[in-house]
Image: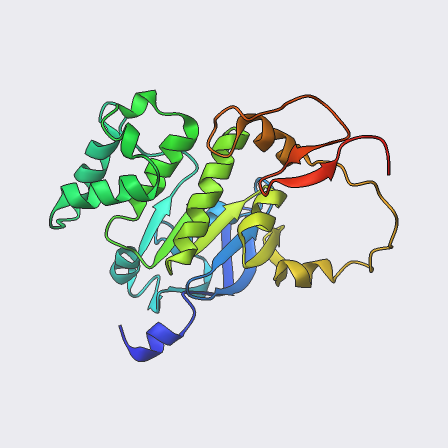
Length: 283
């Protein structure tokens, strides 16, 4: 990779268009993703999110426009793009007959990497799956399967990873587990392109958010920048109440363990940070 390639954005898209007969799915999509960041492509079902990911991962050719990943053009240097990326689809691509560790070892061997056992053990520890490593994947929960799926996609240390609606169909606890895994990816320098239809997911994870609507990016910015598009909020007195996330985490705990609920009173411990919050009716 040249110096210019390393300094440029990890993903660059300009004027991307794609149609299926009379249906125009993409109508000139433009965006760029900085290296080591989480970029959320937010949109409803059918907005074209998966089509963008397929084009960027060389699985589909655009009708017009250009796209580059890790400094490589997706058309003229498709092989280099594929070596630079990993794609995790909407459903976990794991072998349920094998154990979690065996899944990881298999992928490491297919990539012709040295010491696949050590690679597997390292990823099991990184994604908090060591205790379940010897179990068949068929016994895993949805969140564990998704974490294993993401771990498998990281074998070979790809600089760019595409997560196409990674929490679809997961329960609340499993979604939180995946969110933590995604944050850790970016923390280690991996560039993440996340497609999602969940507003809270984009809000929790993304450094920048682009909204794809009717085949076009209608807004692109940080969460703070997007909030500035609306009129300033009015200051009103509102009694602070626990959020649903506070309630859920208090009851089940961060690691899925039953939390201490205690007796209901005017104050109680809620939330991930253990803050005292007023749960009574007094102001």
